[in-house]
Length: 347
Image (spheres, one colour):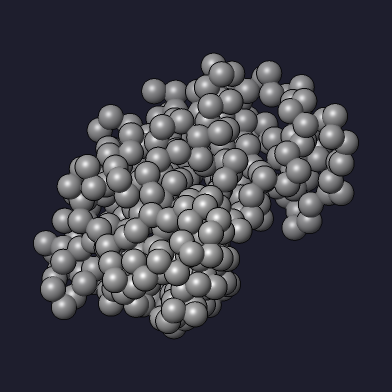
């Protein structure tokens, strides 16, 4: 049987570079297991933090070791693709964050006219930009926390505008609230604020990351997540829950072993679980996602209500990540999951 050549694209120019490498290692192992080993040949392509693409032994070594090679710093190599790129039959991009899951790489792969795993340009870009995402959710009638969109111009441009902006946030959103760059993942640049001084500092900090910032109202809720798999007729997984002791689910809590506990499936009322699954499919359609996505929610026990938080169109894919664990609990193993995603890309 002729093997399908899978271009495993990982690394990338974002703060989630290391997370991407860990996801790629787990995917590579799964594509060598059982029937997958007969069906697929892996062509690893590593993107350095400076944007240079590396193939061959360099990329392969990263998947099998805990270290990364000395980077190439020749600017003339940027966007000069390794020769192996022309051999790829289907791409499996596992690039988290900006320049990876925001539609940029998806546009490049579309121009290559080679199928790829995951959402296209529209789904990726809507899923990455929290403001555009929330507008799409609102249009679909999905309930959300109160939020306010802010621009870097409002924060930096005029000392007379900034105090009025903070006044409006205090009136419309109130404390506690969360200040977030609109286009970063993995809780990077997010701050929980409880006072005017903290708000001013958080807005200034977020504006250093992005020109678009979102301020969201804080809620007392359980944080639950659902995974979606499919294209035109997607399916929702069981619902999982995240427990943690930190003030919120920040980057350190998310990626430090022992800082958070995943409960799969979550002990939710049956009707709430069904509601979350249905809302997940609605959110998936609202942003025109494809292949895979993880959707995050707040469950407010006091009012027995559910609010959608966000969608992640290229979630973490390590063996301990929520997305593959949700499907494992639903009856789809890690190796079956990667196989199914490649088949969805070809479809």
